Image (cartoon, rainbow, N blue to C red; front, side, top):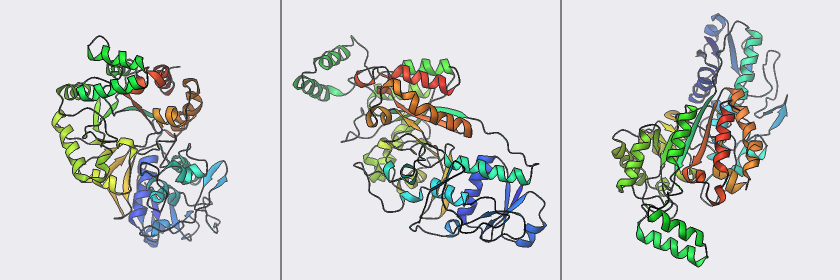
Length: 439
């Protein structure tokens, strides 16, 4: 048990100290704003504020965790001791542990404070990577919050060597977004005829032949990679999560209908050996009733409550998107990451609870950040398969070092070995082997 004094115990302080100590470090804490109680408390202990109580271990604070509401923040990122830091302190007392406020910095990152501030959205009305503090200051590839936890831990053990921090265990969770369950099957004759016409106009005769062979059951649908994935998971003893798009057909939502028996059977069969969650449609992000309908539709297929979610197109609008999920009793979301860049959108490689800055409160929704997505590397960065390890493996190494959780996003179609995805099956299995230390 570590006793912590702070002159004011706010919801922000409770939240971020719980994250750092109970979740990232695995130790229990007691917060107090009573100086006499703090002075009488046995070791280990430290204070957090603008001035220390006495000569105890002291972590200096900026104002962020004592504030309410959202205000522009004057942030200057520096490199100190090889680490990226911000929210530097004006003065550091003799007993001061660090030259910056790691708790405020951690809160700024995981609360996604910057996403509440004015910013320029991308073409899909998302907060883009280029607007983030991490990208602009070259630390998107570093889980800085986990590193801050290690810095705090070191300072405590230097003062109190008897404190034991249990080791964190690295985890790997493969996840898949099923945006389009099949390339040709179960799409109806109108969509297939339209596809044939478009392929013919562009003289893409190979696609015409493939479509006809699949529709006449002479060839397997190229997006039907589910059997191969199941064998892969069995081989490496993995428990994946599949997120199914079940929304109505729309401009950005082009999966087959949930009313089709073949699609329902596919979802049910995958749920026999994997976790299944909702992939809320692009259109549902601005329409709560659509979202509710989609969650209920998937629940009816599986005959159980839906608790996991990841937004289609990674659409996140703070705090509305997450509050909608809370309102539908979704407990775990896997959207936290950028479409255009690999790395750590929230600066962390461990799960954490969503803190709603509009209501200044911790919610029951746990956020599971992902680090790597197939489309990011192929579509946005135009990487050849052979370049994949140079970008992704150092990120995996960072997560292993932090004892975090590596979550990857792939799609059933990206493992089809078709067209631009030729050679990516090997890339994916090699990534799994590297992640599990089986090389």
